[in-house]
Structure formats: structure tokens, C-alpha cells
Image (cartoon, rainbow, N blue to C red; front, side, top):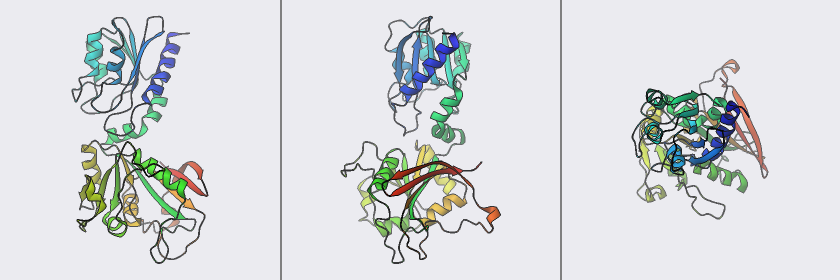
Length: 335
């Protein structure tokens, strides 16, 4: 096996390790593998969430002497002090001779680790399995590069595009399998965003729950957008939430990013969902379709400012999945 093949094998294993970490929060999922000069794996580590050792430090903690080893990391080692120290300095202090990574850290504060390592005389090789690492970290990388969270807009509708019946009733358009998948998607998000209309109409808890009704380990931050006040008796008031009166959705997203929110799940009604779409702020759509017909005026999406078929917002299908009698369509804006 060539040296490059050793690096690629270790990088793929590093991505597998990284997947053990939480998908939510301000920190990325990162894995690290330490290689001996002959390419054999000496130690490995991964990041378990904010405030815990980073992947490199986790791996280094498992060897008595790292001098002469190669560290293979899925993301460029960080170069800043946050809740933990810089990984670049930890690698230098440990005496590793070479660092191989897949993707550069785009963070304004955390980037620059590769240059710091080179300054200290450590050999640095970048871009190993970069495409695979980019795909794995896509949502975190996108959010970090632009300074706003990855936005998923979700709605549930009948096949004729209705989100509710003419009398306003909407529970339940979709079946239990779809509703459980929604809870799973909530748990994979840092924040769940609704409008004040949804809060006033449904009094939701906006929690992520299991199929037995139990709270899942991670709970998204509830965010309510709108100018109408939230009643003192609202269920949302049982836990911390963010209330944003502004209709400047970009400003809301920038504020959420400053709170370490990297994944936003928009689950408000048609007005809010349409506002995100019209403002070109959507990265992904999660559309749950039930095999029902309702007719009537209560559409899942309202006016998007599209006057002609030539102006239609084109999407690319990512996946189509059966959930009981329903279908989940995942799509993204066409570039």
C-alpha cells in the first residue's frame, strides 16, 4: 500500500469516527487517526461536542509518545482558543511530524491551523478525500462560510398542495411515520422556527419526541418570528425560546448563527415558509405529501413573487422516500 493509500484509508476511517459526534451545535463533526511511519493506525479520536476534547486531542491522549507520527484529520486543525485550546498547538507540542487533512477550516477565528503547523516545521498535506469530507460536512461548512445557518423548510400537505381543510383543521394530514420523521429532523436541528400565527393557532411545544412521546436527547431552540405577542400561558414559555419581531429574516439568521445555531428547521405556516423562499434563504426542502385531496384555499405555500412559468423556482430532487402511506420529498434549489 502506498503512502497516499494509507492516508486515504485513514481519512475514510476518520470520517466514520466523526459521524459519532453530534450533528448540532457550533462545532463540526471531526475525526482523527494517528499513523505510525509504516502506515499502521496507532490511535484514533473524535469530537463529542462543545467543551469536550477535539478529535486531535482525543487521539493524542491515547498515546504516550506522538513524536514522528502522522495525524490524519478530517478538518484542518483549529488555531484558536475557545472552550478548549488550539489543536494546531497541541499537535506541535506532541511532536507529530506530519498532519494530513481533507478540508480547510473556513472559520474566521478557528482557521489558519495549517499555516501555524508549517511555521513550526510540521509537514502539512491538504485535500486528501476533500470531496468526501465536503459532502460529509456540507451543512456546517456552508453555514460557517457565509455566517448564517443551513435552512431547511418543511411542510406537510395533501397531493393537491393543501396544508389544511377549508375549516382550518390540519391534524393530522400525514401519518405516524411521517410525524416521527419530523421529530427526528427537529432533533437534528439547532433551532426550530415558526411564526406567531402558528403559536396562537396551535400552542405547540416545538419539542423533539420519540415514538413513545418521550423527549429526545437533543432539543432544538424554539424561535418565533412575528409582531404579535405570545400569550403568557403558551406552552413555549415552559423553556427558553427566542422571539424575533423583525421580518428581516436575514438578520434573524445572523443572530441565530451568533448563538451557535448552524441548522435551522423552518416549520411555521405558509406565510413564514413562503417568506423564506421568496427571500432566497432556503438550502433544502422537506416536503411530506399525504395521499389525500382537500381542495379549498389553504395552500401549503402562498405567493412567491413568481409571475410567469419562466420565473419558476427550480429545484433538484435529492431523494424520495416512502413513509407509510406518505412520501417525503427532499429537494434543493437548482444552482
